[in-house]
Image (cartoon, rainbow, N blue to C red; front, side, top):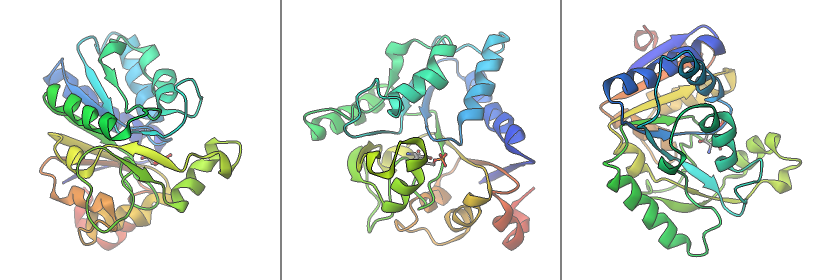
Length: 250
Ligand code: GLP
């Protein structure tokens, strides 16, 4: 595990974007596993900036997103499809036909989940998976549970997640109750993983995830088993780890 610490959100975004940029330098046609939420917004902004400066080329990149809400049409400004297009895809030269998100409106959810896993395999797997972390310790939308889920599946969101994500919706009752998410096995099969966190609100869960026992009750804790895990956080998000395990922070 490599932990990279930045002073603030700007520094965090730049350092995390550097990991992505390095991946693209090593492999032009990388398969990127992409994440949503507020955490990676600055990372996408930085990547867009470097693309506009001619430093990055996304023309041969493919992408698979972690998750999508069930029941929101793509045009909804809260769908992750909309988020990805608005905050990233439309600003870079990625071929949109090579971008993938689970379809939260699929009539046959099981078939959709299977097809998504098949798609990831057909792409040759994920080269670099970007991850945020939820307050429950979720990655993608894999909420605390009794057993790590394997492939893409439908989940019922934890009330804490609904509460946290309600800030993007008119009210809490407008937050979808379910989502489709890549499973833990899909995430762990990525060749490298970049876990990103910023802000004090993530400090305790980052400590539990990276220094606590590996348990499906803290889904992100499974990342301790990944051979190529890069963690980028700002000082606030890494403060509890620094206090209790200073030797982990460079
Ligand atoms: C969302 C997403 C996750 C994200 C997490 C944290 O619900 N499904 O992929 O990492 O919650 O969100 P934020 O970055 O806004 O704190």
